[in-house]
Image (cartoon, rainbow, N blue to C red; front, side):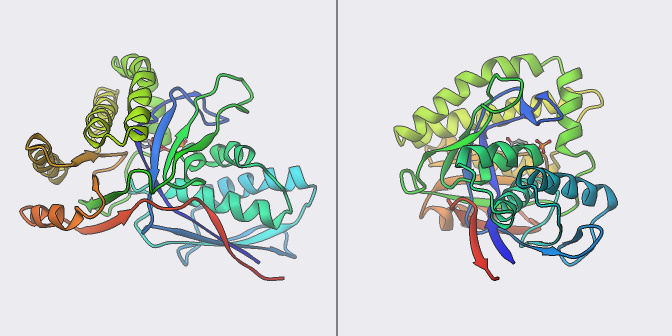
Amino acid sequence: MIKAIAHPNIALAKYWGKRNEELNLPAVGSVSITLDALKTETEIQFIENEYDIIEFNGKLPAEDEQKKLSKFIDKFRQISGIDKKVELITNNNFPTSAGLASSASGFAALSKASSKLFGLEFSDRELSVLARQGSGSAARSLFGGFVEWHKGTLEDGSDSFAEQIADKSSLPLSIIIAVTSKESKKISSRIGMHNSSLTSPFYKAFVDTSPNDILEIKNAILEKDFMKLADFSMKSTVKMHAVMMTSNPPLFYWNHKTYEIIELVQDLYNNGENVFFTIDAGPQVKIVTTEGNAPQILNELKQINQIDEIYVCNLGNGAEIIEETH
Ligand code: 2P0
């Protein structure tokens, strides 16, 4: 039995749209931070059975989810030549499918655990290419700290992988996640980004301006320039949501609490505080600040009523094997 852990990541330069949907090849590169407190733990072992047995947060997942996971494990069966079924038990300590990157940590943990179980010695880059095929953002959750996922240009996707840009200690950050709704999203990222790429008049502008956002965000990280990081990260978030909202049908992931929190964070930022917001395919607001500054931001957040839940994270590590029994 192999047990692996992986953490969600949050993109600062956002990924939205694909150049190849089968291989999860993105239309743009992206830059992310990996979190510490939220986690997926995945156990996997060989079983003598006709099909894979999959348990997700103590339950049997829906049939299409099971199929997707078995199809992903098939890649490891094919490469290793070991045609055995597995029992897979996976647990998240945070809401699933609610814009908190559960597919990123899920497929990163599964990739890490499966490669070990099937005895495959992948390089970090090779494993990232595989994890990407489960869920694009999973390529990034294999690594800790600050991570870049390269868009790549090759048709086979072998140059579309993630790697660490800087260690978590190079610019220590705290991330406060304000959960404004625990409901699963109605439109998945996969479908949402497909529709956006076909219908939003702003999609091309998002894609065209992404390389500069990535460059500025990477420079800000390397120069340890928080305010520059804040500026370009918020620009990337707002551009992505403008694309979502101008898709047909429109994708409104925000709720009224999301707006209230944006306003609060913007006021703090405009007053020169080290703080910015970033939002993904859901209504939760991730508030990024310098490490140690979280108590002050939490105090400010008290002004806003009825936030469902608040998580406080620092930057975290990449996916790891945490247990192995023979
Ligand atoms: C990101 N998101 O860069 C963007 C921002 C959501 C908004 O990556 O279809 O679950 O599995 O590749 O990775 C969510 O999309 O989509 C995502 P697939 P994924 O973090």
